[in-house]
Image 1 (cartoon, one colour):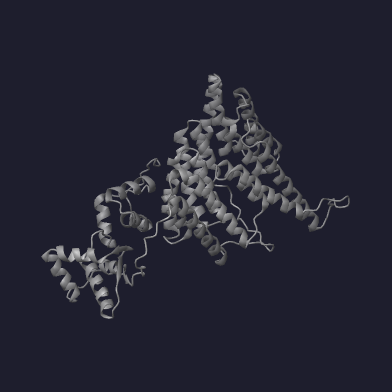
Image 2 (spheres, helix red, strand yellow):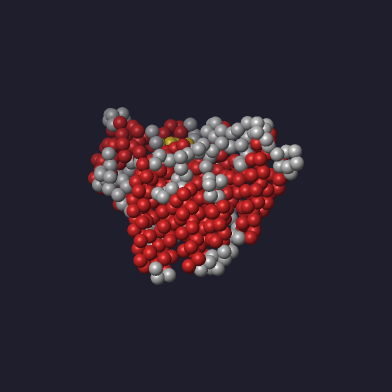
Length: 509
C-alpha cells in the first residue's frame, strides 16, 4: 500500500541532489527499470520528474546500466596495468561487478563507430568530459578474493537465520559509534541522557492506528503523513531513542496491516540513505528489514530492539522505569512474549529493590532535607512504578477487563501525577477495548466519556490522544444505535481534528 500522492511541482536541482543516492540505488543496485524508479520516487518520496528529465540527469551523473566506451577504456587500462605485473583482476563500475565475459562481449559486439571512439580514448586523442571523468572515478579493479579449491559450495543460511545475526552486528556498531563519537551523553553515574523534546512524535502513530481501526482511513493517512515529515528532523538529531521509537512505530503500523509498515520501512530506508549515507548502520538496518518476509517483520523488529537495549547497557545505564515502559510497548506490539517481558521486569525490580533499603522511622524527609533523602524517594517511586507494570503484566495483560483497568489507571494519574503513564494508559485502553470482552459496549461508552473528560483536562481539548478518544467514542455510539449522539460526537471530532492537524503541521518535534 503506497502513501497518498502529493504534487509539489517538478523536481528542481536541489531535489535531484538530495535524492541522487536513492535514485542510483534503485536504478543500479536494485536493477529497477526507469519506469519503476519513476513510480517509486513519485509514490514514496513525492518526487515528480518526466522520463526525459531522468535521462538528462542520468547522462549528467554518468549513470548507465550499459557500459560506455570511456568506462571500457578505463577498465582495459587498469586491468592491463595489473596484468603487466602478474596480477589478476576483478572489476566494479558504480559498485556493480563487471566480469571478463561481459567485457569481452562488449568488445566483440561493439559497433565500428564505438570501436573507433574506444581506440581514440585509449590513445589519448579524445579529452573526456567532466561527467565521464566522474564516471571513471567509480571504476575499481582489485585482486579477487581467493576461493578454496575442490571444496563444496557453502550453503547460505536462510534469511530468518542470517538476518538476525547481521542486525545484531549492525546494532552493536551503531551503539558503539554513538558512544565513541560522543553523540550520546551520560550522567556522572553512567545513566544515558535522553534530550527533552516538546512532544513525542510517536504518539500520532498510535493515534493513526486507532483512526484506521475506527474507519477514519483518510485521516489516519494524513496523520501518518505529517508524522513522516516530522520524522526527518527526529532522524537528523539521532537521539538515543531514535531506534526504539522507530521500531515501536513499525509495531503500531503492523497492527494496521503489512502495507503501512512496509511503507515506513521504505521511507526510512530512503531517508536514512540521504541523511546518513549508504554505509551508516541505521541505513544498513533498514536494508536488512526490506529483505525480511512480512510474516517475520514483528520478530525481527523485536530482536533489533532487544539487541539495542543490550548493547546500550554495556556502555551506560538505562533508567529502569524507561525500560519497563519499553518492554510493555514491545509486548503490546507482539515483539516479545509475555514470559520474556515478565522475566525482564522481575530482574529490573529485583535490582532496584536491592539498591533501595526499606525506609525507617527516622528516614522521612523534612524541609531542607539532604539530596540523599530526595534520591531515596525517587528510587522508591521507581520501585512502585515497576511493581505496577509487573502486576499489570501478570494479572491483567490480555485479560477480558484490561481496558477497564487501564481507564482506572488513567483516572489515578489525574493532576499531573505521572503524565507518561497517563498517556500510556489512554492508548492502552483504546488498544484493548476490542479484546476486553467482559467490558460491554454500554460500559465501554461510559469509560470513554470518563476518559475523555480526563484527557481534556490533562492533555487539552485538541491533543491528538483526546481527539482519538472522540473517534472511538462515536464508533461505539453508532454500534449501540445512539445515532444522534454519535453524529454530535462526530461533528465535535471533525471540528477539533482540523485544529489538531493545523497544530501538528506547525509543530517542531
